[in-house]
Image 1 (cartoon, one colour):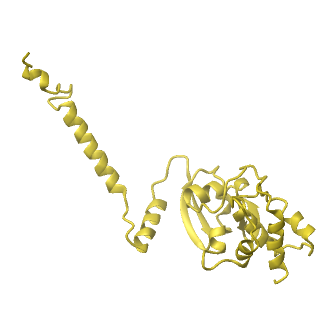
Image 2: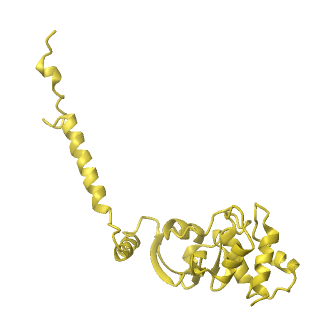
Image 3: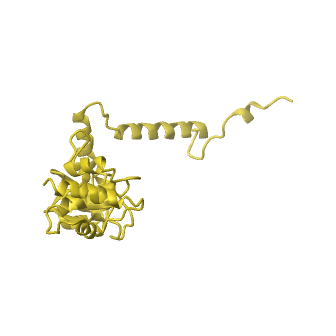
Length: 216
């Protein structure tokens, strides 16, 4: 049976003579062009910095507030929800994911960071309240090849298993060095009681902490 040529043609849209296939093609091409226009090439360290600047300088989102935070010695100007915690701001806005979200209720210590040299649970702290504070995360404490002595001690004494709580444990242990605790293992256990290790590596954690305390 012969097929009428009219049946082979795409029906014209109600907007004019543009067929459905042509319309979708134009929309698809426009979407690709728009997406491509927002991509910042990462060919060099300079372009990475430019990309970060571009993100942080983005137009304000309704309901957010401008906040300037000093984290690990670097200043970041960002737009955040005024209810955003320091934990979520570090992880989701600044992409510093070394600080972990455990219970999100201030009970496990996985999110411990330093604010003006003191340890705090970042999940209980509003980021917008810290615009004049010096914030330090595990990324600022040390890096592979240049570990903080406490980080090296945790490696040497096998003070971790799954590693999820480790950044919080180390940040808490470093802060403890400046606090007035006694010299015994029991004192370390009490000082570190706010940091939970689900794997049960407590004896090794205490050994790591004590090894630094005895050499400090």
